[in-house]
Image 1 (spheres, rainbow, N blue to C red):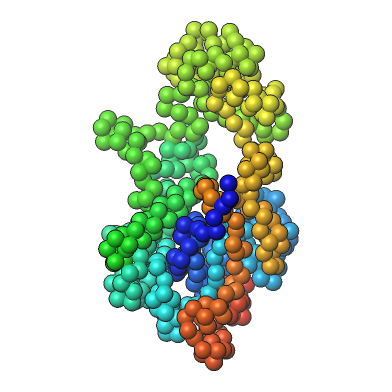
Image 2 (cartoon, rainbow, N blue to C red):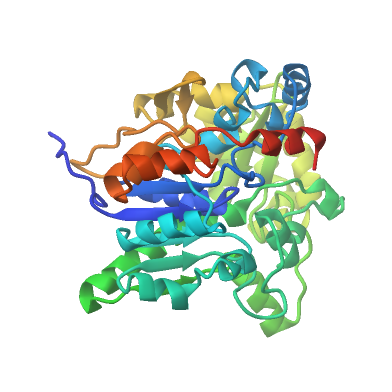
Length: 446
């Protein structure tokens, strides 16, 4: 069936002042479906933990970090190059379909340019610590006077008000404070073994995109803009609703869950043949347990008195896990995955990046996107979260270089004259690289 040329959010323009991942993930999703995302970035200071400009490493250091599994090593060929802020995989992964405008709204000239942008935008999204936006005079009370039809999304860690209002936090800190790290930890180990997942950031991206669409719908119905406050902590906490209610109803504090399930057994990740190869299995009925035992070549285990019935299996889950691990460790995870699925058993291999890129299901659906980017090269990127019938899902723009779209935004969209634009470039307010003194300070680590 032929696809149409229009995207659902075509014609929507968004001023993007986001950092790290949660906020950029919102604009990534909106940009994928047609919104014009204008990323506002200063060049007279480096936004921390965003483009990677504040991370100064050599190629040798990046190679060592990459071998150790640290994302700081994520440069093409492990080479930061002379413009590491354009080559950082953490930034580029979520920045396709966006434009970059060099602008610092904490300066008078930058604020004037940003106000011009707000006047021709439909939404303004930011996830900075609240005091940053408030000091710049760009809170909701000010913004709605600039553009009464604007939708503004603010994504503080804990809220715009309250005792934690101006606390700084990443998703992992938020997850720790609201209990997620403890719950998903392992019973035999402390939370320091849990590792980072940044689930709160991922969820915030989806909810933030939804909130913008709802805000635009509100504007369509009323003619007025909307102020949306979506704290990272509060937007993620409903995921833990079951555990919170278990305490409010039963006064029971949930212990670390690890790979376990509240009622299913076996339920976990089990070793298979090869070095560090694993298979995830989830059994939720007697029939499925019998099918699992048959596939593992030990059908009599399903009749063992210790494991007859779901409750008995759950009570003896440690003992059962040891039995299952003994049976799985001689099989290929891929072969066992298909065998169990054919028998109606919930199972899936635990794949690394190389195996995921080669996954036949994802490749059959053309899920990965091949993107060519100047100074970075051509690489595969993660695909879109969903597909829409008769709707294109091609990448329209590669991740933007710093300030790449300055001229078209300042001259064509915001109405600056060439002389005004050139003067801002001469003053170091607009450009396509960070100021020399900024790079020198980053090199010194200050």
